[in-house]
Image (cartoon, rainbow, N blue to C red; front, side):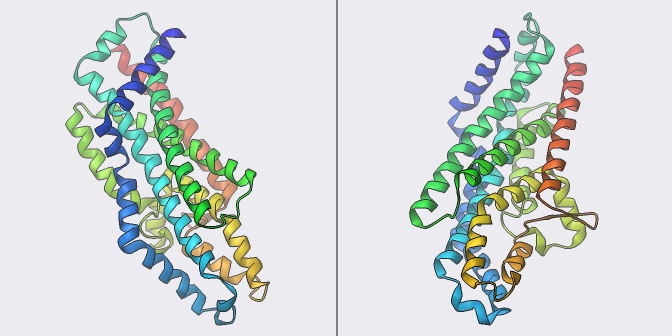
Length: 305
């Protein structure tokens, strides 16, 4: 196992030593943040105010601080959700670079077993994603915690980090099956540009997925990253929404909070069905397990050639 750990460390350092690679892997997250400052905050606020217009008798019961915290946490979920896609993919470009520079031949010439080579690439990418997303998530929670009350307990925070880890690992496993089809780093980089542009829409970082048609929602929710982002949104916002519901005092029987959950997509809709938290978790875990098996089969065949 020393060779496996050594190769994992090497792949991890290749990513971490490339400052440009780190910046580009966080590009989508930075775009989400910039768009939020320019456009998205007003869009989210308008959507919340639109929901409030349907309940004029409770408008005065909801504080401006809760609305501001709600929009800020939505931003954080979009940033972390985007990073859970772009960071694992960018780290896995090491696989393409090694093949392009014939480094993989040198690795294959060593006594290290083939499954250890595959697992080292997966482990390095997954750890990089967890590290970078952990930093983003922690910084976001600290900043928001200083600016107001997150209404989150220890179990809620633990759930948030657990969802983040699941998202990083599932994205890494899925991209491990895509990366081998790129023969050059330029082709891999071109696909990264497309991925960065599309991922924000797929996970609802720019526009809530609920605003799309049922068919488009189904397409978006086929990808496990969408489910993970929704799970993250639930874990981050449940406390804030419960506090808003308590402030209302039950006058609307929970209708306002329910409308917020519908507008900002707290459940995934697929093929005419709606998945709750447990269903989304099982879906993501199943895709993760299938991706791991497919990854081992795909790379084993490739390394035998």
